[in-house]
Image (cartoon, rainbow, N blue to C red; front, side, top):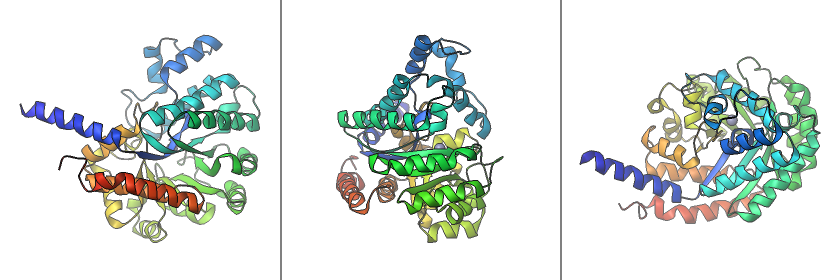
Length: 360
Ligand SMILES: [Zn+2]
């Protein structure tokens, strides 16, 4: 009987977490492809793959039984680069990424993407793929109850593209591009010098900056991202817990951490969910947010991540609501728009924060 009651409670909690309007600040377009779409694109365009069967394809593009490891997690993206085979394919995956977020009751989404990943294999122009993504995302947000902004991502191992990507993002700042991100292998490519000039130029032009740091690399990578690249948010930042001076600096400057619990587990950044520092960060006053990172690679949704955060990490419900408001506060929007977003979420979350929607 106790097991049945627990199953009921878990289902009720999942329903509540699904119903809560949510914000995802850290989601990669290239990590959001539906597996069914991958199989269809492969059939239509003859993508050279280890297998065309969806189940046989799964382990190549999704974490299944893989031991936790940062670099093998990143390796999934390499195969995915083969799927952006046409303009239609790029527009389709961008549209579906937004539609899937909306279907999970994500009401504000910042979707990041690498124009190089989308363009390079097929020899597309970076400008073209960025415009295709903008078009598809705009169409998707008109047809769904969701607001979307875009972040142009540059990879640590491809610094040669950073200046051009910064220019492309600056040119499209009024078309939904709001920020630059630096991502990828921070273990073998910790150097920030090649990115300093393009990121400073982007920031001076009014774009925001977020940087993946202190995920697989040391805490000082998060500090350097703030001081050298002007990061206002840090992707993950889990390892700041290893350095009190860096943790104090992140707290003092109120740098928002974009936390992605399942991804952190799969990359080996944390050994177990109950050892995740996100609640400790929250209690210290560091602005923490909950995000998906790569829904299809991690086979997750934002509802799942919230479930993991309450169940696995043990974060109380009220703190979870605060983390959604932290996300609204950290949205890369002009001040007036951000205040409207914050106001809307504050009102929408009030019944949940008071416990009125939890049967308490
Ligand atoms: Zn990420």
